[in-house]
Length: 89
Image 1 (cartoon, rainbow, N blue to C red):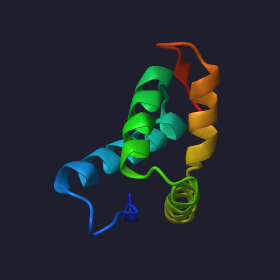
Image 2 (cartoon, rainbow, N blue to C red):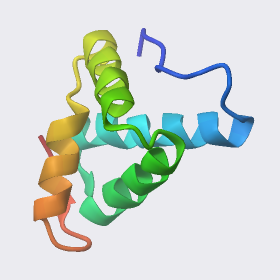
Image 3 (tube, one colour):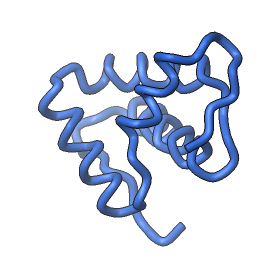
């Protein structure tokens, strides 16, 4: 990994850790697969930190530009999957 995660200086340490964890789940979904339930739980926490849809899109675009991993597609696939179903892109 030779890129940084999109974060805000105004977030607390806990919020930064939670956002990074969410983006790590996105990476894992692309690289080896992850349970849909874990992605949805991480996304729910991400939305508590970033409630604005426009800000969410900005962070998702930044992350994809830096990493090549599409967050929206992972969340979309997790929403369609059931519970502990493994998802992989």
